[in-house]
Length: 294
Image (cartoon, rainbow, N blue to C red; front, side, top):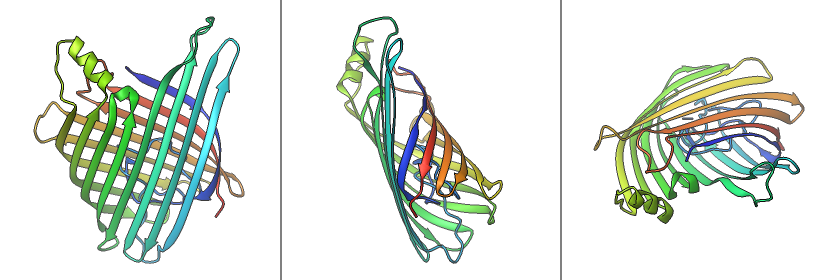
């Protein structure tokens, strides 16, 4: 089933997130957000967090938590909830970051008395460790977990070791590449297995894939208030050439007053060979109001 959800959400947040190791996801990709948080509500795939410019003096402890909702009634009945949290700790050449997010949406058909049905339901989490060998090179290990009802997944676990190279590493912009390995282990939902069986295809409850991973990211601090970032991730199975995935994330953040910022984020997830009955593309767009405590 294809998910297309465009949610305009006002979010208040405590804590601050100016940058995190990316990736993009979530990267799950890696993207510095200064002066505003990205406000992202999708952490897997595009690269496991947000990249930090590896300067000599980057020691930091940063955290953010956010939540928001959209509810309508009357002719149109729908509800959307989102929440997220981030943490980053940088000491010298060592950096640890973690991120979690959840999204839920329910809607009812207009002009009917039918109850609302769930249209989006996912939970995601990421942890990542980076070691900076120099200002241009780093090594990392990222782990992402995702539970997504409409992708037919009880759990998708990705383990991603790799290296990153910063081609541009300046105060106003960063441009970097990542190469590595991806171990993906899926635990499928029984409903997804039943749909495949009805189509005459017998699927295993679990599947493990070995893939190569490539990521390219760019961030530009256009001025003291506005920052733009984007990242593209590609995962290619080394066992079956027909099995590949692509993730694209983009964000524009803007400081509007003091510690208040706005963030517009876009996430696209493409699976070339999804489970039977599952659409291969998911898109999530959000507009957030973010408050940074620190």
